Length: 299
Image: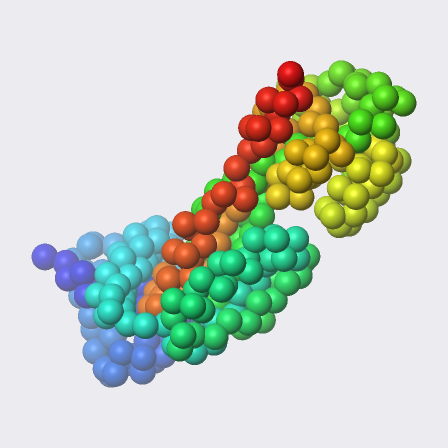
């Protein structure tokens, strides 16, 4: 019978790219590692690694087997970590990154709740509207909005941020309310010289009258009557309720942007990271659609 411990050992060897480094981390000899991997290959009847004097190379079968073994190793580590940390209290500095708008409008109460509940923890909140490398910049958690493009990170979905096409009553009185097919010719506020908006199944490549790189500026410009903007609920909800903006094209959001908490690994996940992400996951209210605003628009 193949030992799960040998499968975990194989995953460690591949990840480290060396028998020596794997042996050093586990506190065993390089010879023991080599013998256990050879025994594993013999039991499987498959060559997993090609060995040379300078390096290891994973075979095709070994690469497939590694994916399975790495998943098992992660589950084992996660189970052990949960058992060890169940009663542990977060201690020390937690470094969190977030887009600026989300951080300013949404994270303050989350951080306050976390610090109030766990007084031995400290938080450094890094607000930046750019893609951040968690490993290189020494971050524990990042809030990511939109499509995930780094499969090496662990991601927990917190919700979806609805975005609406909005315009001021003055703008609509002057230029009229466009149909979905007329949107491409309307005065719009965008984030690139040419971008595509999809409304009611119609895709429109807009040519913005104003191009900005900040959602708050886009919302303020829409309130001022510059054009039609696509902005998230937490930015436009007050202006919609107060009648300074109107939602176009019915109650359905124009776009849903996924909101994730991402962190480097499940392996030995620190208590402070686990509990902060759990605190985040309980607070989804700012990501709810503008149902009330949409109903008032139809009345």
